Length: 402
Image (cartoon, rainbow, N blue to C red; front, side):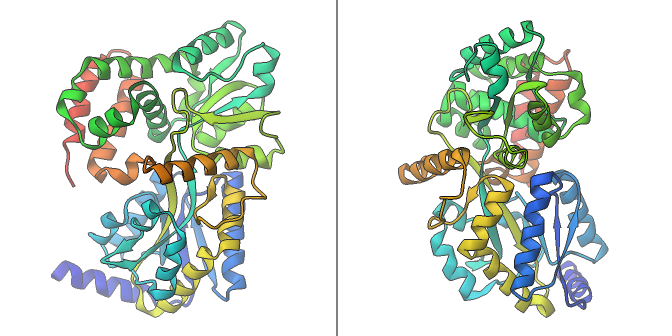
């Protein structure tokens, strides 16, 4: 009770200013363009929005926690964590019936993640496909190679590229980048059922299985196609290697599409965007959430901003700038490129079949998710750690509860 009372006092004290503040980790070129449009949309709707950018999602999350502890939280923040995690820690805003009514236009898998105690407390900006293989088509054509459709094909192609003196695979330094590779291997080799039972449900038999050993060994094999420079770049720096003609492949979310578009590259001509090897038709996704924190003096402005961001035109513009696809089912996709059109088709087909795969960041507890990333990063970095040792650590990490 004392803790709750203190939080309430801190929130009230921080709510004296009239402006809203958004804390986020969007700092790449296409992300910055999206934030500029987001601020413009707010201004057109009569909401004065201040934005605070922190490079890197993990850094932004750390600052957000520090802001709460210091008694000066922002009004809203970007987060990839399930809303329930925030609801357990701090009071959330009730964005009201108008926003709640607009949730009818959202996919069910998204809408259910945005309510706390039955009331809307967050809004989505767009849907991102995470299991995408980005390819430099110019380099592949120059060497008589095609985009691989299976993992066996990927290894053969990567070896051929390496013999030709090219960097097969660009990657950044973050733990999230390593996780993207591992998920791509697990889903492509072992399938959705194994993925969910082993990683989400932490099935001990699967985690200790020979199949998991093989998956971890293949994950580490991918490191042989990367370079030492990965330790000092982010995902956008990895994408830049493809744009500069220095690398051929990258596994990352379709926010990379925004970088290719910004550079004027054309899908199917300069670059390609396909499901990761073995993932045909499978849509592994996350969506950008803006969670609104309870600050009574600002509630009216929060509700107006939430409604503005859910409007079809605004949602579409933001998704087009950042990459990804609009979150609304009724969005007009006519202005989106072939990469986004492909993602949208697979997302809608997956929703109809009930086969969408929600990102681990939204389907696992925070401790287990953090532990998973830590183990994969350590295994990637250490040549001495065996796959069997990584399996043991993985099982321990996934047993963690919040």
